[in-house]
Structures are given as structure tokens and as C-alpha cells.
Image 1 (cartoon, rainbow, N blue to C red):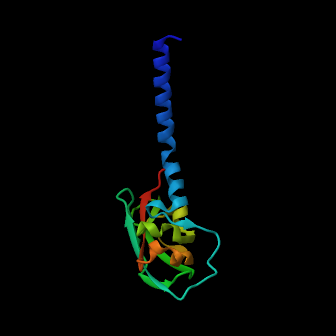
Image 2 (cartoon, rainbow, N blue to C red):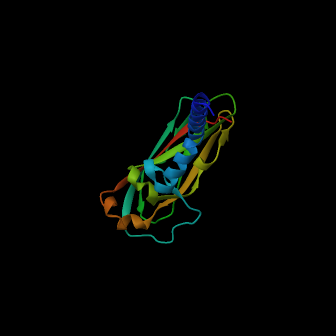
Image 3 (spheres, one colour):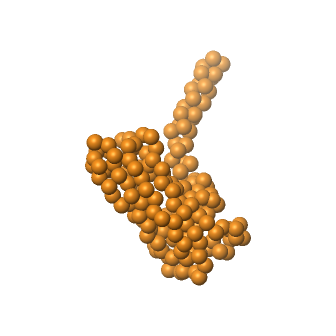
Amino acid sequence: MTSQQRTVTILFTIVFLMIVLVAFSVPLYNLFCRVTGYGGTTSFSENISTITLDQEIKLQFNADVNDSINWSFEAPQDIDFKIGENKLVEYQATNLSSETTSGTATFNVLPEKVGPYFIKTQCFCFEKQTLEPNQSVKMPVVFYIDPAITEDPGMADIDTITLSYTFFKYIE
């Protein structure tokens, strides 16, 4: 193999590896965030909490809509609840357009370090949402705060958590 062929082969390999890295970076980053709670990503469990502590925490809600979709999206009222208590809240979305549209929601929790302790057991954000023109729907979220949060010294300053969602147009 000549030096010119070797150079072409090396460059082709580098370009190929870069393309593969770009193609898989988003799914790998999402997996990393779900596992570690990095970036305020919450955890998911099919199991409800069985332990409720006599310690309350305040939860604030936020709802945003990206310009890509003509929906209104309303957050529930802020609540105080006990750590470990299973809670159900409902966001409300309305399709303001004259055509059927689909959306998907991204979410995060602030402060970000709380992510691993915020456990969702049911969420509209896990699925594509399709609304008819002018249709309004309630979108439930069932969650709890893992009681292990009280054993983490890094969480001692947490008394308020914000759960935030942003809806985007679903692109197939």
C-alpha cells in the first residue's frame, strides 16, 4: 500500500467514525442523562413509592411551547407534598390550529442535581401526542421524590423543585 493510499484510507476512516459519532451522539447522551440524572433528567420506574416521609417539599410547574407547534400548554398549580408520596398532576394542552397536529414534550427538573431522585411512574412525555383542531386534553404525570434524597448530604439545601416541560412539533 502506498503512502497516498494509506492517507486516503486513514482520512476515510476518520470521516466514517465522525459520521457514526454524530449519528449516535443524541441517543447516547439521552441514555447517559437518564442513567445519571445529568441535566435535570428524571428517572422512570414502573413501581410506585411505598415509603412516605413526614417531610414536605414544594414543587413548581412550568409549561412552554416551542414556536414549531401552535398549541397552548398550561401547567398545574404549584403544590407542597411529602417526600415519597405518589402524586398525580395534570398539564393541559390545546391545539390552537385548524389542522390535526402531533407534538412531543421534553422535560427537565431544576435544580439539576435532583434529577435522579425525581421518579416518574407515568408521563405523557414518553409518547407522541396528537390533537385534533381546537382539541384540549389533560396530560397526567404521576411521580414521587425518592426518600433517599434525605440521605444525600448534597441535597440538604433543596426545599423547592421545578418540573418543566416544553412541547415541540413531532416530526416523523
